[in-house]
Image (cartoon, rainbow, N blue to C red; front, side):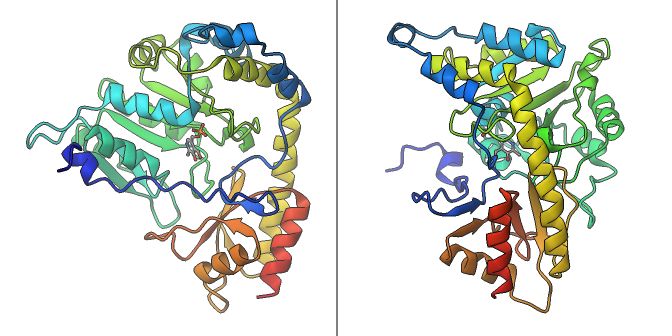
Length: 362
Ligand SMILES: Cc1ncc(COP(=O)(O)O)c(C=O)c1O
């Protein structure tokens, strides 16, 4: 006897990147920041005492919202904090997408393909129809993206910018055009998980007299702020979207340690910025070194590179397996359009050197 709902019983669970136990590996597979968080952030964690832990945390992380509002020059009612960016995705799908009823397959989620595979998993858990819109050969967005979203009556469209797993950055004007075409039909969630490593973000779309009431941005402290272990993300958007999401949020989504830490991270953003600069510099070097070795590397505005090894050499899968045996983890996706490529997180210079040495020895 299975007690699961039909859609959950048929669900193929999301597969996260490998998290090896050993510290003695080179981990370039889950896009973590290769540098530790700022000392001030670690000091903030140490400041948490027994009395703070004895009590429930502030339910909506008001102090964090105030801090984020200052940093982003928005009002606090345009900010919602979540347990990692992943929770914002789950909330958005729960709040904006209709679960399937009978043969009725409208009201669902639209995403590009390929993209972050968790979107589909979350859509399936909510049992909402998922429309996958293929990217062009050059990873560009389909010209009729908004038309398809509207035609299928999707209520939420998610675009990752810079895109994962390619690292491509869409222009602000393209995002604005899509948001305007979807207004009155669907929410556009721009997943900016990697935006700290990019040339621009989409915050200005929220500042235009709040006229775009259907744009929601996802931010996370996991990448830019070196806090993947903390599980803290947040959403930025029109107050009406934030209010709707808040209704479905866990009462105490962010524990007291994560609230204190997240505030310190944003207050000491200048320290994180130094790591973004180092990652961008190393991204250029890794791009150049892989290109010299015959890899076809997608120009990236993120902290990872999607690259295709030379046809004359070992396949992507062989390289992935061989690197893994040597304790170097990169990401291999056994799926259409990606199975001949590797996604490599930009690490510290010494990690790049070890990676290149291992590739050269193949
Ligand atoms: C595209 C994308 N969006 C959102 C997230 C969520 O990040 P987190 O839940 O760690 O904040 C990730 C994490 O890898 C991601 O790759």
